[in-house]
Image (cartoon, rainbow, N blue to C red; front, side):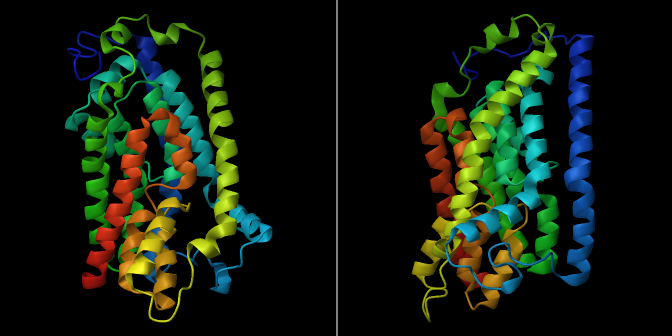
Length: 358
């Protein structure tokens, strides 16, 4: 039995005072963490974008303005720059991803996000808006949601909505690039977050909720178990399964970025070859939040056309090789491949739109 066939998950469920208190603790931790890591820094970054029409140099090329040759030094330099930009958000993502599993009641999550319908998907996408996280930092939370039997569509919408519909990134983009880029990003972000996530949930079929909802609802309260033991187990599993692959793939991608984003030959800057290469590279490469903006600005200054810019606008933020490895075991394989294919198709479509309108 799945969430789509059970009756009303959580119907008649009355949370205890302890359950309410633990849920409030989660909210307080999330608000405090996001305020420190995201909201306050992005306020200052928005001021910089509005006044200077810039948020910094491209993480691909750095201050030198050219792509370094593949080497161990190149890998190390990129990893240092990348992790210096994301480590606080990455720690917060792992913390919240583990706390989701021990502080939020399964009954409530199943009632709100447990069904394979559009409502659950939409609520998952809307819940992503305050997060403003990159794909890798949002991935542990999506994994935590899936461990609580949240539906595939809702968990995907939360994961994809964080980088694609980030309100701060949209503000930066408007003042650094143009409103046309922002409009294209919003449209593609809505399609990916809500439509692709919803159809991915349908594609998941009976795997949407691994355990029958009715059995979960009738279980004794989770919080009767020792909180600290459960939290340490949850955090430990995440650290062991997520961090090693994360570190290795960032190093590999950092070393290979000159191959992934080649200069190409004269006259190929906006051709179909460039669009295809940069669509694939953008889907696999890993960047911090909003880093696609200076990357696109740099490639435009190199003479690349707006088709390439459109492809990177859509493919760089939502997924990456590290984040795909993080969530791979939490979703059916066909769903993961469907999301990757959808990102690439949207990237190609955005390239076509970008070559005409941007």
